[in-house]
Image (cartoon, rainbow over all chains, first blue to last red):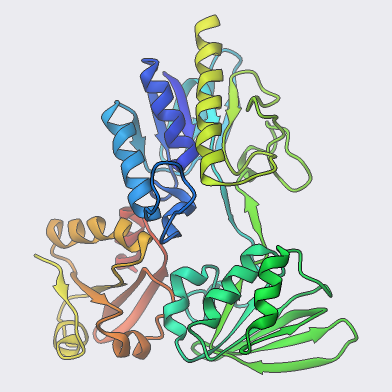
Length: 301
Length: 103
């Protein structure tokens, strides 16, 4: 029986582990992939206090080492179910079942897909969800970005410096992203925006070679491209807890800044919680709040 | 065994003509998930003899990456008898990679 079981070893979960260990609670962190979460994809973090520049990999590794040195135990297994037995919880992975007095859900989110046939098969063969990760493969090539939020705009600006031509395909007639980004897009000669449009087909043999784009007015065109960058938002990874934990319509755990869920003894931290600002610093902040709430719950019995 | 550094020059000999299956790890120094995967790939090379492990740096070997249609990294490609039989994109835990090499 662990005092605190943390689901997810991103910045929120690992910060919770640090706080929990400093309060001498036994801690198990379960992670489906590897420690770090999505910050690992960020080449350069510039907005976290103290570190003017640090790569996501270095950040994640330092936090991991800090939590591990304090005695947090890490296991790399995907949590498939959580059951509430009142004064303790049962957490299931494909291989094991764990028991803990409290649980902190810090699962984060994953990329939203377009939902087109062959999308999975073409991921890594022309379809990407991370411009800074994969942009280097498209020097002097033709790419398209799908989406109209800040991520899409920033991706397009990043790619415009590498690629010969960048299309932005957006289903509305205006961007949702910041005006400053929209203005920079308008000033780029090699970016062309296709408004009121959606990608309706991926065309490929071994790798992506073109996409079919359908306009609101019904007209269809085929664009020959080398790469498609999908930036249509993220989905919180709460599906496996939906029958126990209250989620909002978009799938985020309903909890305020106190990180309390509807189940006593289960807390939430980071991007999978309903919140306004999803940043590294708010994720680590949530980790501290959720761990402190769990510690109080344990101490008050 | 150690991880073999794959190049255009040795790829045919080390990968395509290998008598054992080969796990090829396409990676780059600037790629965070690649750095996460790197220790696992090294462990796999050291701990077992069923398959060889080759690491290809896509910045040094961009033509090799292009030849094999690699456009996201980390990208793990499994070869047997000169042919690709499995491929995984993104970080994968060790057990998943072992399972992939069984395929």
